[in-house]
Length: 158
Image 1 (spheres, helix red, strand yellow):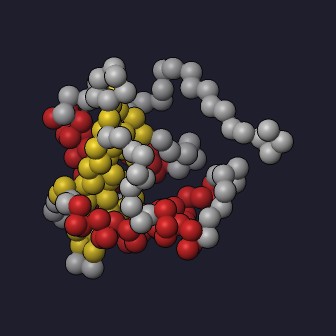
Image 2 (tube, rainbow, N blue to C red; image 1 turned 45 degrees about the vertical axis):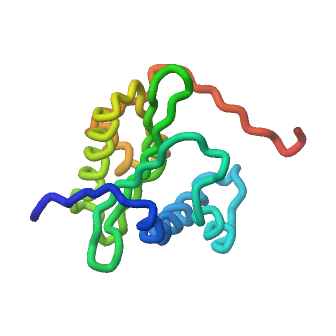
């Protein structure tokens, strides 16, 4: 079996990402019950483009298949004033392609991008119970955060 070929998508290729991004959001939102659960129509609006207020660079890496994409990795690069940071913002592999090396190839390509751009810090967010994702990221060299990260969520009475 040959290694999946990763390419950097052009902005005009964004429509190829939308079906997988929508599938990702639909499958993940039930795991975050404290967040608003959006309808498919609302999710379609979310995946319609990049938020206007975003300040940074988006790079979408993908592996193609005959009917569209086998998977994609959406990387975000930005400088908060302390050096260029990178994030694997979204990674998704189509169900029928899982286990074929697509995810590994996409993560490796994102790390190549981060090295090329001299990123000082890179991170990825995932659910602890998403064992496949956690394993993939750990094998690539990501490790649990050494810092205490505290978050604030508004309560319904606040």
